[in-house]
Amino acid sequence: MKPNVKFITTGVVVLAALGVIAYKYYDYVKYPWTRDGLVRAQVIQIVPRVSGELVRVPIQNNQLVKKGDLLFEIDPRTFQATVDLAHAERDNMRDIIAALVKQVDGLKDIVEQRQSELNQAGFEVGSATATAEDARIIFERAKQLLASNVTSQREYDNALTAHLTADARLNEARSRVNQVTAAHTQAKDDVARGLANLGAPGEANARLRRATADLELAKLNLGFTKVWAPADGYVTNLQLRVGDSAVANQPMLAVIDANSFYVQAFFRETFVGSFQKGDRAVVTLMSYPDTPLEARVDSIGWGIAQQNGSTGFEQLPSVKPTFEWIRLAQRIPVMVRIEKVPDGIKLRAGTTASVVVITGTSTDGEQVPPVPRALQ
Image (cartoon, rainbow, N blue to C red):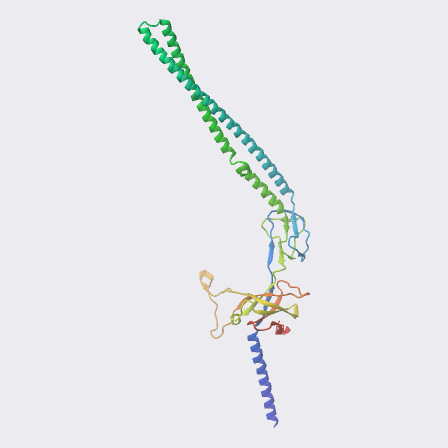
């Protein structure tokens, strides 16, 4: 009788153990979990735009800063001097342009004056032409009358003198027109050269725009001497001190974005096929093992690096040996966003987290307990 009791007892224990194992396996499949999770956050590299000596570092290591808080200041004196110089250069350029405008206006006045002289010379040519034509006609008639002994030699000589004088005045008037025309052309050429030297008028002038751009650049560089926090976050690993040298485009410190914390969990590839964006999840931090945090799946990785097939020695493919009857499941990164962080819970980048994903949309996440301490 006793052997039967022992047999029955053993069978009951074995069946109970198998039942527990089956239930846990079902629970594991229904609620996939992993303890291979890390808290991560966006780390902002603070990079100065200009170089110089640090004159102010008002922050402390691990300090919470708000967007717009001053992180550090570079000695602004050199950059202020550059701004002052650029101001002077722009003012000087305005004076130069004003002088060129006045010069062009004067040249335009000369063109108008030469045009008036040209009009007057043209009028004089017309008058001299008419006078010369009248004198020629009188001379021709006097010549005919002298040949017929109708007029005297004196009248003929007077007509000849008047004819020659009128022709001379006509030639002089024509020469004057040529001179004034040349002067008028020269004046117009001077205006064209003056306009070309001046360039576009007003604020559109290229040299003035260049001087203005130099001034704006100098002001920007002066503004870059103060480096502000780009977002709310935590100053991390601060090594800066007053007197240190900042180098442009070289990271000086890091700020962890306080609003960017998430959990990156690595799940076996056999599970991620049932994951969907928006699935509820429960995160348990190793630093707070008894406080489950509600979360949701934000995204699922689309690829991981593979060593097989990569280029190895002598440009040959690198292939690892495998066991034909054993295949290890790869782990896929899954990004999980914590919906609400309770008071007293501090998220820190790099800390360990365990994650349970509740597949499907009808399961209530509040019924899922945190990952057991032994499995964290």
